[in-house]
Length: 81
Image (tube, rainbow, N blue to C red):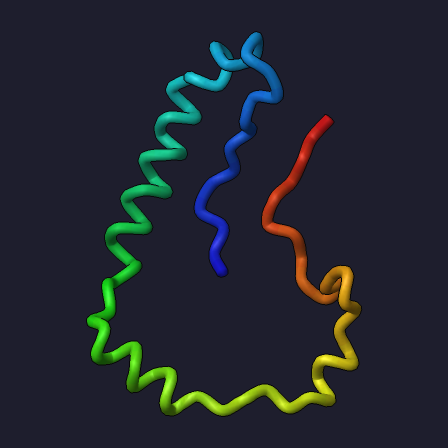
């Protein structure tokens, strides 16, 4: 996973006007451009091959993960106050 940009989303309609700034629009354009340049579509026939080649996860790994959350994975969303 790559971090391309940080964008602070408004928490209310009053803050919406501050969200539409040149800095945020550039960041969103950068994310959009990176997505379309780096993410390639995969034909349905290749998806079937990928699924067929994958191995099932061993059940003992599920015991290591708390059912309510995954503490080992960092959260991609940040909520600032």
